Length: 271
View 1 (cartoon, helix red, strand yellow):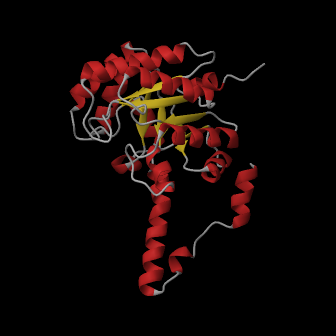
View 2: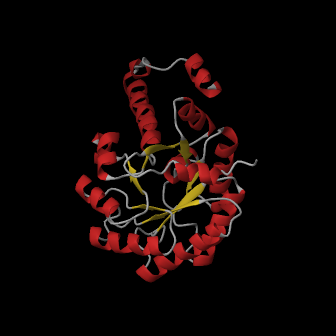
């Protein structure tokens, strides 16, 4: 029997018992994360852009993102989900085509946000809903299961408040989305409010102030999935930054003193 990776991915989404969607940025980080226990891998638009020496938000093409996702799919035996920004185009039919191409690449799902990249401004409400509706229709027409995440990014981008986020998320639910995501609401209470407002699983991100929130606290709020975004990648870049400053400005190599052995890394690759 052929494995339905989308169905496996969907089964991980349990409100109140969240799994960690471990966002990787290359094959090595994906294999390490799976070796450490990750049940699913996500791409990260920002982390992937950083590997190419580019800024986040609209600077990676759809072909590049799909090829990157396909590399991770081939490297690990767990579901892989794509962080695909605004679906790589404004038109609803572009979002639908992105869904179809993502499934062909072996991805178990993708997320599409309501931001008119490279601007931080959101798409108008009606267009934002039409884009998710088209993407959802494309997902349901696939031969296998596929988890479509609809993102309302206006709170994170400072473009609208939680009331507008809730209005959009409800409309995205009605349009056929499988999972909802409003990154970085102001408080954990707001996160719980988002979870209570829908029958769909909700994604939260462990970033910024939410890195101080435990999995148990996310669970109590009703979250079904905890993603990392570019947080882990930026933690790695922090070490490069700090070690580079120390060695080039002070001749100090001590920040590199506490490292994992090559053997331990290789063992995780094999795991």
